Image 1: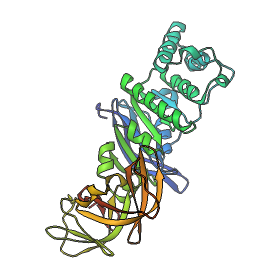
Image 2: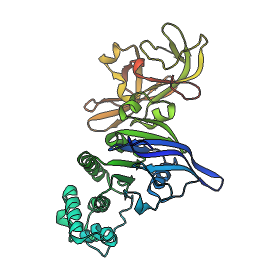
Image 3: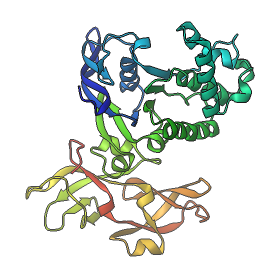
Image 4: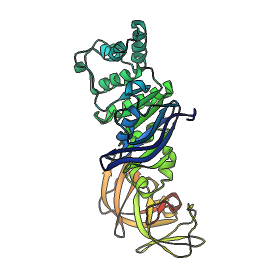
Length: 365
């Protein structure tokens, strides 16, 4: 196995009876990389993480951690630390007791236990909490302790299984920053499972978007956002979701996209494949709401149209507006101080070259 990778997964298969959850899964993760497994419930992301952790048996394939084949090793022998969605703290023990319990059970010397607990407490800023019990802690503090319990193992690989899902929005945002700082400080390999795209985009070096047990796209947050490989990825990444317009693409020196009474020049759009001479039916043009221009700025856009505002959703810094383009419900963002109301007529526009096009099989073209 290559020394360039912290984790190598080769032809992994997981099945329960006749139900195949993962098949032909191949994934290489570099040393010190922060990889996020992202997808909806049931896509296989937690199954993959649990296989790496040794919590699930595999039907076929191999898992290597730091060059060692650990496919059939016990979790304790894999050199990993894991943080779960539930804090799973011992309620009768203090924070210090929770942090040190695993080390003491493993026979680590007392002075070494003290050193590791002190180091983890300092990194996570939980030193004032060491004498408290879990019932005396907030949700965010409990999750810090759970992270600390993984940290004291002093391992090269950390696995996070939706660790922030049980927290409220503000705590999630705060701990998200702390986890990123933790990775920057430790430079350990981290694999993080989530269904939250904001967590994925803000934390990851690379994101693996999963669907039906398959990785749809594995790339940097920048590339996944700007160049989604298929319609599923395009619709999954972005909040609010991308607008989709279905129509026909007519090839030429300047390809034309038509949908109902919309005729949109695709000048400047970089095609990923060579088109034939025949029009392509069932093509989808995707435009992100944040790429839609408004008012005077829209007038000079390659495509513009007057629309009637249907629904206005103020969000503070910006406002999400829903309008109809033909028979399509279309959403776009405007500056938060604009006072728009349902029934207002406004001009919007966009540059199609910033969009994404997908064929009838939902592949990027």
